[in-house]
Image (cartoon, rainbow, N blue to C red):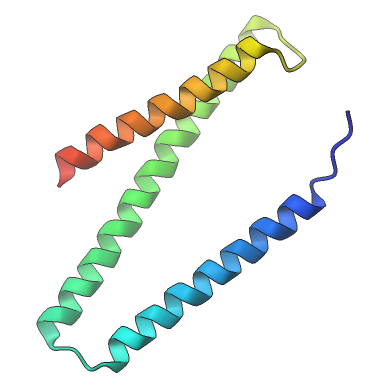
Length: 107
């Protein structure tokens, strides 16, 4: 089965561009309101924490998916079957649970 990923890639790029634009616009509005130094510091610390947690989240998901695909490769499967899909979904679910536990500990 041949799949053309061009439309998916274009959509992903557009979604990222919109997200970056909205983030920059909202930051600019907050900074333009001339908040006090304390509010500005809290805003920047919140953004920094959000970025660190996002990196942690995607790192955990990437490792879990790598382990899932390694497990699929070790089974010698060269096509999509229900067990392979279940393994990938279980890896994503487990990584989300691990992230939830770690983020609760960090807060």
